[in-house]
Length: 259
Length: 252
Image (cartoon, rainbow over all chains, first blue to last red; front, side, top):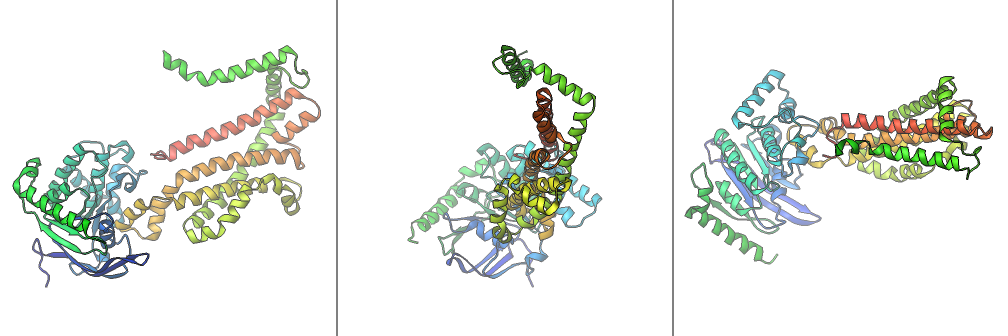
């Protein structure tokens, strides 16, 4: 019965409940993430942005509720996850290329298929550095690129990104945003991006999910439909400026609201 | 030019040390019977290795140290992994481990003598016991402090609990494991030398040092001390080299 057209619900969250030390963070939380879209999550400090995607990705237990991917459970779904801290997420004892191959090895693919898939990724990412190096021999941006390739290797249905560029300098962040858009254009994978940078959250997203203070609810979902690929020129277009200003209004309203 | 000389800097300290020793011996401030000149000790060292007496002692000490270390590793590593992977079990035994780790191993000699008797077994058992605790502690620490993010990354990529243990946690614990093994073999050497001095030994560097002292053969005593020092230094260096080879990512 589910429609598989882009924009239709891909991830459905129903009745999500989570409390920390008895203080409710999520209480009967419902949400749909759109298929083949980039949804960014933005909200006040401590509203549980990362907690939300960690629960969806199975990295943190939920107290109650249900998360389904096209009606399937997480176990039946291939996901990818890009961590904020690439230094702590890559395996430094493996070469970059073996890091990328790791999820494929776990999936039980044979050597030839793994090599073919890794080659494909290397070609599509147009990598300008040696993947035979160890992660610690690479720059921060290169390491995060390896992380993204590793997450994409098993062709995930959903890609989670938890503040993926916040540890990078601005120059690198700009080029990584372009890279991420290219990946999105090439794969059409559903992406869920947690960001603490409002400009980035709006710039990359089709939908910006604005959250309230805890107990967390949806303050608003702001749609941003600027055509892709978006460039630095997008940042000064009226549509972007308006969407960002509106997002900032919503954010400030939520921050000021008495807890 | 500057760089080449810098590489020789560590030698400068050693040369300075020998020169000071030589001057002190030459000055006659200290009775030459108590402190022979460095060249006398060097001759004793050369003779000891040439006629085989020190060689035999040296290898006996190496053998006991290595055997203790192997036993300690075989016990300490698996136990450390088991304890480290359960924070509740570790919390339950942490005090006991920490207590015995802090107890001077030499204080345990009488107890081990009662159990193992006067002989080879006691020396090796005490040294292995001391080293095992150090190794165990470090391995458990390494396992417990494995990066949660890396474990989470493996989990997201479909690794189960055992897989995460093998693919991530054990690798994560390796740097700390090597630290433990390096400290462990150093401690094993210390305990073996002390054991050779005081519990019924007929050979070994420890026994040679104390025998030479008792018969006032000071050059031989210094020669045996030097041999023990070189052994300790060599073992440490060997482990550092292995560590750098195997744990190339350590501290990065």
